[in-house]
Image 1 (cartoon, rainbow, N blue to C red):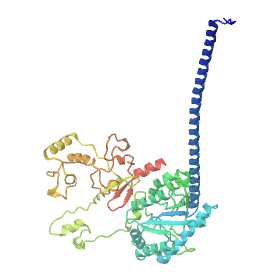
Image 2 (cartoon, rainbow, N blue to C red):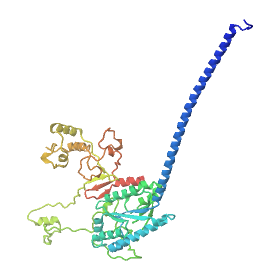
Image 3 (spheres, one colour):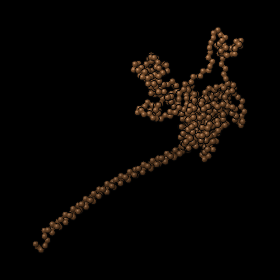
Length: 499
């Protein structure tokens, strides 16, 4: 074959080699393309991550700059307009007699002396701070009329209006000093003072708070939350207007006295209808009364706002009753007088126990509590249910209080009054309705409910009193119809035990 020795098989073998080479090349190129696509996907993801990081960094940088500016502004704001607050119960912290007796002039002097005393204490407490730039705010919370009457009865002032002039001058002498008249009822002063402490103590610009006086153990629960907070306790000082009771001594808060401004003893009690009216001042300070009786007691915290009662016996006379006659031969007694008349009269002269004053129970936060009711009798419940079936729903006012203002226009049944056992059943039903006044209700005759009787352990899915589930259900004091209060001895005993 023209000198070539190659056979067809050799060509086939060579062709197969070319084919294998092409197949390997195609596989290699395909693998390269696949790897390229995977790398391209990873690259895209990395680019997206990088862009996100750039945006995030820029966002946080912007927020950091904004926060830094806000912090600087806050520091500048907190460094200016700083103030100290003094909240004083004026019914117990009574100003010195010689200041009150001067009326308007005494009020101005009193403001100056108090401002000086508080400024001096602030300088001693904060030696490294510029206390001179701090404003001093003073709120005297009191019953103006009640205190004015008491001061007049003690011959300290001639007319209750003099206290008004004193307070006006006190407020004008220092622009941030105020006399706040809350009227009768100790709970009004307590509530306002408690809210002032709650508002101002967390305020960064309020650098220090003075609270006085230490005469009333009723304020101990108010101070308890702040006593446990060391940072807040360091900013709180008690003004000791009378020797601190053991409860205030155990609180552990720092205390100061201002003898030039406040009486160091309570107002004097009347002796046989008279009180000492002559004072001798020593270094400009009138010495306190001797043998002064305390204004408030543990069982009657409301005495500072109540009417002053003389300790001397009161003689009663009656023009309609015949006077005893010496000619009767008997001693001057009502029994002897009765025998002299035309008919024989029997007069009971035994002392009768005064009826208990109506009151409501409140907790230490002045929230109305319902006195527990006894369990109702099953038979009375059955009779009550039968009457409901016959007559329909009963009128709460008519059957529980004996009168209904709606009269014949009332939508509920009156008829024959329920028996005591049936009335108890009705009282339980009335308690399931929420009183519109809620925590502020002070009507001793209110038969509606003021909180959930189960408290935080209520198992009802829907409860009318759900908002009261977290309320403190421990009675702390009685509130009477005239606004006066009386702390429960059982509560005070438990409180002292917890101390």
